[in-house]
Structures are given as C-alpha cells and as structure tokens.
Image (cartoon, rainbow, N blue to C red):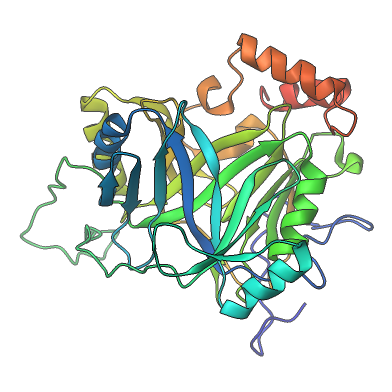
Length: 380
C-alpha cells in the first residue's frame, strides 16, 4: 500500500514480530466508512471516595491540578490541551470511561444522528459540547468538541546525552532532580472485556480507530485476535501507536492508563521519588515491544494502575496492522520479568466470580478452552 507521499513507507512490523501481516480472511483493522474519526483521547473520568488522597498521589505522580472542589478533582499535563484526568467523588474507586476529542463540531452532529444520542453542552458551565454513548461492554464513552484548552506549562527538559563519539556535553555533569516525573499528556488507556470482537468493531465503525497491532493466542490464530492496539486515524499525520488497547478477558473493566514524561531520566527519577514515598511499583522499568515505549507501572492508593512512559512509536494511517502471538515474554524487549500484579493473574474471590460469570454469559467470547489458552499465554 502506498503512503501519503511518493515513497512507499517501510513496514515497521517486518522482521520484528510479524513478517507476514494479516492472512486471507483476517480483520483489516479498520472500518471502510466510520461514523467519525476521533482525533485523540481528551481525558479519562474516574470516581474515588477520598479526593484528598487522590490529589496527594496525583501531585507525587507528576500531574498539575487545574481545579479542585469538594466533589471533583481535575488534572492536566504540561502540554497545551484539555484536562487529562477528571476524578469525581464516588462511593468506590473505579473507571467511569474515556472522553475522546472530535476534530470538528459537525462530527458531533453526525455521531448523534447515527447513534440516536444527543449533542449536549458540557456540564459545569464549561465550554464545549459532548455526545455520550455506551460501548458494547457498557463502558461510558463520550466525544467532545470545543472543550477548555490550557496553555503550555514549564516542562522537564530531556537531558543532553553523550553517546559513542558524540559528546555534546563537556565540562558539565548530569544530576537529574529527585522529583515527580512531570506529566506532559495523557497517552492511552487499556480496557478488558469478554465481548472483544463486538467492542473492537464498535470502536472502528463508530469512532474510526485503526489497529496498529493485533495479538492472538498461540496456536489459535484461526480463532481470531484477542488483543488490539488502536490509534486515531489522522490521515498522513502520525498518531500514538495506541490511544486505546482492548483485550479479551473474563473481566470487564479498566486495566491501566498511561501518561507521557520527558525522557528516561525523568521517568526513573520520578519512580525513585514515588518509591521513597511508599507507593507500589507494579512493573518496570523496561521497554515494550508493541509500541516501543519505555514504561514504569505504579499502583495508586486505590490500587488502580497507572503508567509513566516515554519514547513511544507513532504511525500514520498508511501503516497496516501487525500480527503477533500473545505471550507474557513478548511484552518487553528488556526489563525485569513481568509481574503477576501487572498481568492481573493474582487469584482472588472477585476474579473467580468474574470467570464464572463470563463462562455462563451467552454472548461472551470467553470459553473454557480460550480461558485455559489465556492462562497459558500469560505464563509463557
């Protein structure tokens, strides 16, 4: 497939993890005529019972607080843009849903007309309009246009590095401050569902997301993919390798969300800062294979997983999906072994209840055989 210029793009998947791409009859990873093509993820909405505790962690993690009321905490990064996270007071900690950003106001009208929803003003006397939807798993998904945009804030500067025979730093030393990793922006979120294929099709057909990489269970490729890393379709302009990742699971819900920082030193020094304050590292530091990000995963005080990342891949719309087997060992190029905490495989009564429910649900894609394959993949 030709790119948007005169030179055919190189295949970023070739000889890395998937030299052959899709096989005959497999999903293309994109809808022919989506309702809209969202431009980015604007912010994520959470509920938590203790906003004071949530704010302390947010500041330690590297967010900037934009507003705080008794019932709501709004957080942003240093890059210009909307809020990155909105936390509402609620009876228990959990993920409410993502808010995507439409590039043009008519996108909202078209989305509302095609889905039977309404275009409404954003609540709280804020600028902008929103369409609120439910995805096939019951997740609250919104699309906004015209929301408040914050100006740029001072940022951590990437360190100047001496490498090989290139020594741009002479007569100076490196002393990165032991301080919070300053969040630049929201990067992506990951969601799990037993209705993987239905949800995947919905995000492609409704919001125009493109699949950057598919994963399938080892020796079960013929049954179709079980994970999809999806990016926004910006045509010839590159977007993050994934704005959303979706994977098959007996559970329905949030897995983690990821926030960009300046460089590896900002990530590592910020991790040391978090460790000194007693927070729990879920996994890291390492570099992923799919997406290439340098990562560091943490648990907040409510046990929700959040990620610092830097140096992620960016693809334009010309790149077709890669295909790779889903294995625990295939999660990272380097770094410590993946933890059970990150994989979510620690046994618990709640997990057993979710497995039982998924196996009994009529339209669930989780069968006993696939569940066993998932368990094997996460230990391989």
